[in-house]
Image (cartoon, rainbow, N blue to C red):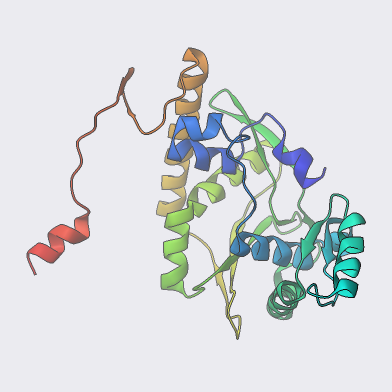
Length: 266
C-alpha cells in the first residue's frame, strides 16, 4: 500500500488524532487544508525512505539535475527534468546530501541492533472504542516484538526529545500503535524511538517511554476517539470552541501559562 493510498483511507490514524486535538474542524477539513510539506517535514520523509525503504526511493523522489537555471541551456535541462517528473517529488541536491548523511548515521548506529529481521511500513487495522483505526509503524521485528519509530529532530538529547514527545504526542502514537498491533496478534514488548538530529554531527538517541507516559497516551487517544464519535453522530465539527459535556461553548475562560505564575513569584 502506497503512502498516498494509506492516507486516503477512512480509518482513524495517529495524524487524524493530531488534527482532532487541534479542533474537530481541522480534522473535517483535512483535505482542503493540505499544503506543501515544510523543508523539515520533507527532510524527515527523505530520511525515513533512505533508512527504511531505500529500494523505493527512486520510485518516489527525483534529484534535480546540476544546471544553471539562469541560462538558456540550464532552463532547458530543468524543463526536461520537470516534464519527466510525473508523480515523483523533486529534491534539491543539497537536500538529498543532508538526508543521505543523516540516514547513514542512523544505519551506522542502529541497523544491526534495531533495524534488521523485520518489516518496514506495514499497515495494520483495528477497532478502538467502536471506531475503525489504522497504524503504520516505521519498523516491526515480530520475533522480538519490537516496534521502532524513527524521528528527525533538532535536539535528540533525553531532555530535548522528551519535549518533542510532549509537543507532537508521541506518547499517544506509542499507545495507539501498540493497541492496534496487539489486536492483530502482534506482541509489542518494546516501543523504541530513534531520534536523530538534523544538524551535523547528526547525534542519535534511543528512547523508550515509561508506563506513566504510555498510560497518558491511552487516556488521550480514548478522549479523542470519543470526541470523534460525538462529532460524527451529531455532524457537528467546530473550530476553537470547547466541548463541555454535551454543550459546545464558543467563549472560553483563559488563564496564564504556569511559567508566568512561577516568574511572578521569583
